[in-house]
Image 1: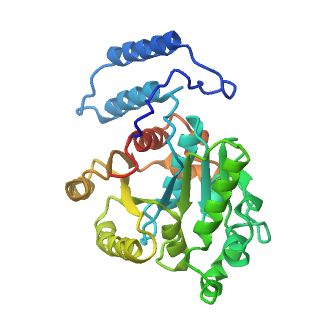
Image 2: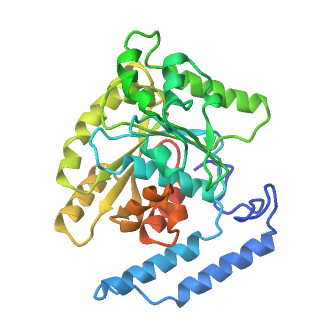
Image 3: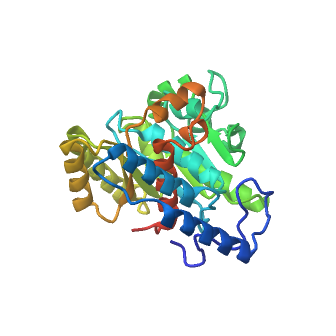
Amino acid sequence: MTPDTHPRTPAAAPLGAPAGAAVDSRETSTRDHHVRDILDSLPDEDDSTPLAAQLVLDTRRRVSLDGQQFRKPAKTRIITVANQKGGVGKTTTTVNLAAALAQAGLNVLVIDNDPQGNASTALGIDHRSGVPSVYEVLVEGMPLADTIQRCPEFPNLLCVPATIDLSGAEIELVSLVSRETRLRRALDVYLDDRTSQGLPQIDYVLVDCPPSLGLLTLNAFVTGREVLIPIQCEYYALEGLSQLLKTIQLIQAHLNPDLHVSTILLTMYDARTNLAQQVASEVREHFGKETLKTSVPRSVRVSEAPSHGQTVISYEPNSTGALAYREAAREITERAAAL
């Protein structure tokens, strides 16, 4: 949490209001009282009826989140979303957190550094072969600004797409000078240029990684200042975590001393199974400060959204999965950048 910010600053504009619109402090106070009254009127959650308990929980989340503006960081937070194990929800987490942050009034940039291009698909971004992408940035030195596209669902959400050309970048990068720092230098130049041109600050940069520890992931780790690790609530997810942490320590020592694990998010959580509860308990025991209180449940709506070229935040904003990601995004903005 930055010292000069507050979850509900009077100057923040409500969702849908023109940029720069101010909110009267009395209006904000009225909203807060209204939200509290609604929350107080809801029945207590009853574990004996799981469906009703979930409906009450979702209603509480929706009432507290709707219309809320998330706090802006003092400077751009650059977060690499990584886990070398596949299928743990890296891309899903990247795009839905990005959409949730953008929906709450923040300026967000997603860098799709995975040759599969799934983040680009979910954000509705053109990533056909030949479209300027992260490949041209890494291999040909193209300015990042020349590759950026705007997400059609959220005007303040930008994306650098990944095309199939990126699949050959691992080999092509081997012979290039400063192969590990090419993405970082391109991003730093882009952010500096925005500042010099008087453009609004990018509040969050989220870098999506492939499920491997090759040069693409290495570039993402050198670019990021923070690492967000999605962990699927299954046994195998824990096995790869120690190797990932060792890799991060090596990068800290040799390439990026600012890098640190700031956030761990439990994904595909099913409270009905003992295994999920056990994995969650172990993660929270060993990484209590880093692990978000919010966990993301298995959700059909979250899985369906990319087939429509959308995130679940715009596809089904009141679904359990969307509310969980919105709550996780709010929690990230309320935590200190360095834990």
